[in-house]
Length: 404
Image (tube, rainbow, N blue to C red):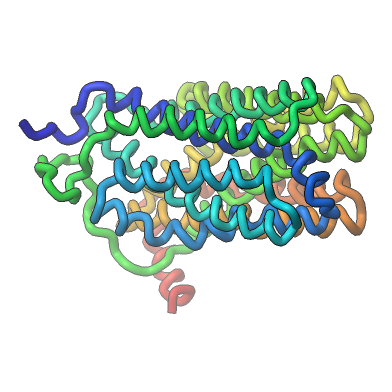
């Protein structure tokens, strides 16, 4: 008997587990960035360039993932991506040089990019056939997984466990994710899947890049830069600049991921009360305050507070940007694609830029670049509400010049 689209028992739980597994795999790895740096003997600038590999790999893979899902289905695509990504995370422990670290991160990032897009396609497919908005909870599950992962990394660092942690926990992640994937449902274009038309299915989008989606993309880029900077540099900042133990650096990263999770769970009620623009404004201020506390105040207890504010501030921006992009008249999924691509650019240039600046002026001062982007995010926050179709259409007319 054929599966009803979106209706397979346990599909919501399966998507939650796969999102959480993605966050766990990332969190347990980034928590050990100081140990990876020491293992290959990298400078701050060299480490930044190596970390760029994740962004390069992801951006190379993302544009092709939709076609892969159309042909093979998200279950098969995510399964393959999980196995390659977890193998890559495990291989980081054996990287003998900066060049090898970079190459491994490119391959890992390629698989992670496919994993990310394909599981979001499955999430959207499952959500469209339910009365409840599940997407914020799926992303909260990712953050929860990152909390567990970075916590595991912190515990390993505190106990003096070497990088053997990476392959062990990567293997656990792969087993859990692949087991959950059996509950994934078929997409409407997957061979053998019945097509039940849904009013939630998007209408064909018009062509032509609009200025409003570019501005929403810049808002999302600032949030992605702030999130990436925490994952890449927060633990290292505390260890190198403030002389904290490696375990404390990983613990502060865990605090960041805790409030990322809480913020995403509370994003719905906060948006109902403040509106998307209000959530972005408040979030930008909180995140900037958290970064300033961590970088300017020489206090390890306050660093924990700063990490909490940093995570809470950026937590709701990405989901808000996706919703705003979906309201751009006549653009829908194409606007979401544009915004996502711009945002992921932060993972491409963010790590090497901050690394190079950190080499020149110190990592604490280099992170002030993120504060500047958060200020821009606050200024651009009104674009998060597309109030009038006529205004959006005017922006679309102007965009014809941009796309031409």
